Amino acid sequence: MIFNSIIPLPFYTAIFYNFILVLVILAALHLFNNGYDIGNLKKKDALSISLLLFVTLYMGLRPISGRYFGDMGTYSRYFKRYQSGGEIILTTDMAWHIFMKFCSSIMTVKMFFVVCAFLYTAPLYLAAKKWLSQDSYLLFLMLIASFSFWAYGTNGIRNGIATSLFILGLSYSNKKNLSFSIIILSYFVHSSIIIPGAAFILSLFYKNSKHYLLGWLLAIPLSIALGGFWESLFMSLGFGDDRTSYLTDTRFADQFSSVGFRWDFLVYSAAAVFAGYYFIIVKKFEDKIYIQLFNIYVTANAFWVLLIRASFSNRFAYLSWFLMALVIFYPFFKAAFFKDQPKVLARTIIGYFGFTYFMFLIN
Image (cartoon, rainbow, N blue to C red):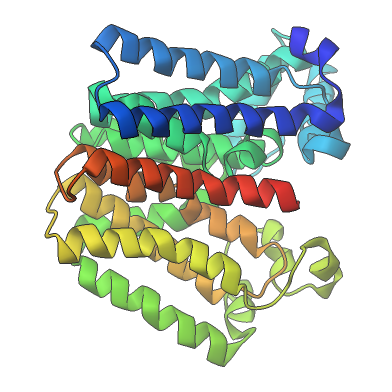
């Protein structure tokens, strides 16, 4: 419990971001000076496993605090309720509540959060390893360095675990039954997975990325022109559950830093859209895995664009943003697209985490 005892709560998040900043700078410098090669396979595995262990322990052993880690306090109260004999809550997220009830019978609440951190981080490590093998460290690092990673490991914990499981399910595309089983499990951990899940199903039957891109572009003027129509429509259809009440309820308007058409986040989302456009359409990159990742991302992100004005629309944005690192970085390790590609990758790594670090600083 060393992290608990020596790090003051106000500095806990800052230390994480600055640690990742150091890793990103070191990775970029190595790419500039030595290209992709970072030693033998054992050394690369050691880097990935060390990062996995650090993130799991640092995130998992954080002090229990609702003030600094949002919903962590709520999860702690649920856990203690189950620990005192409470019955399993019947919701669409049944797998999560069964998991929490089971954990409450065999471990402390502090160990529960360590397990949650592992379930959040390990699927990303395994997916990166499955897709890239020797080059998995850099992709894994970029998943950790993503804008929403820390928030959904310390605040939106259940949602974060669900999206990590979803990525793991995608990585087993060569084993359909296993892939579908993991993705279905992710839905029962957090039902919001229905959005990327629906995009996944669509991607199995329709693969034309140009049309997905056009659909994303069309969502922008539709969102601008029709305003709150989309929020009202999805609420009237009974989409999701009571968690979506903030789509139309003005009581939540003061709980998001900027309500309205989020041009800043749209530009951020567009970075991955442009990456997919460049690799698939301009460079004719025909990797089936990548095409599916891009199509899922664009579909889920277009859904968010329609709901962009809602309070807490960032929660819907996350249902595509969790795939951003894959969409932007996966092709770098599969084919040559640029002269001095390692240097281009280094600059992209710096720019990608630069946004994350900037948002940390201003918030």
